[in-house]
Image 1 (spheres, helix red, strand yellow):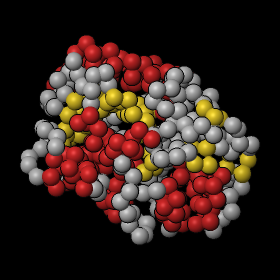
Image 2 (spheres, one colour):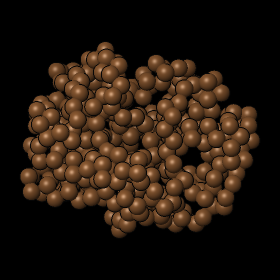
Image 3 (cartoon, one colour):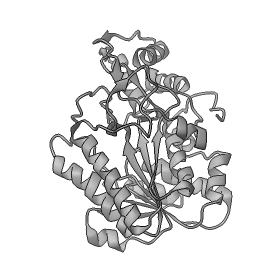
Image 4 (tube, one colour):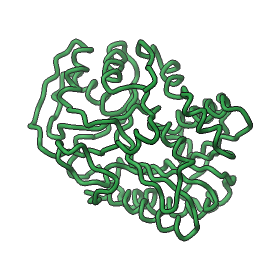
Length: 346
């Protein structure tokens, strides 16, 4: 693992720079990759930093490559922010077949669009975004290498002593969000075979940075003197930059059938321990509620780390940074992860 900075980022600009800072391995991966990169669903929590990471790694590698970010861009100022980093932007509703057809061709495509929160109130839209749309995308870009973001929620809750679910373990999604995510994977696999499209499926949980994620959720609760629920007593986390690095590095490994890869931290982490570490940094002892159970939503990412070695920031460092960030009044995206949910309702 490359050494992280000695201190926490001081503000949003410094954090964004760190989240998009390429390593030598990222630069080598982009140098070995031919052609432009199209990022679909780039307006979410991870997309902007992925686009900037790709731009910076590509520039450091030399040569000429377009990085194109596609989203509905409800925050139009994000288009300007990306353009300032020499990232092309296209405002497009991907559910509109005309808009999807009009997108430029590219030999490398990362698909990030999807819906998790709001599924309970609007399951039809969730299925359209998570299952129908990926099937359209892989047919539209059948000649590209395609990386598709999925989720560790396709696995059932597993024993906390087992190291997490592996890619070869049976899936058993709980709830409509997880079911629609598995449908995405199945349809991508089907159309990859039918169209001869090389793909990779990334089962992610949970990406973190200082403005959102499991660690920020814990810090906010501790800071508000609210109890931390221990019912989901263990979690996986991965620094957001490192998850995005996997998406870039895995493009060259796209295959038929798709390569399926768990993307998360090296090992399961105990929520009680994470909260204690963050509470120490905040100077506020955490208050706990509930009882730890013997199962949790956990993934084993040994295959990912052995093959792509993405880690730059370890979870304990991230805990310390989150505490420092919150203590100094650093902003939040206001998007809780609901990592405690055990019944699949989002």
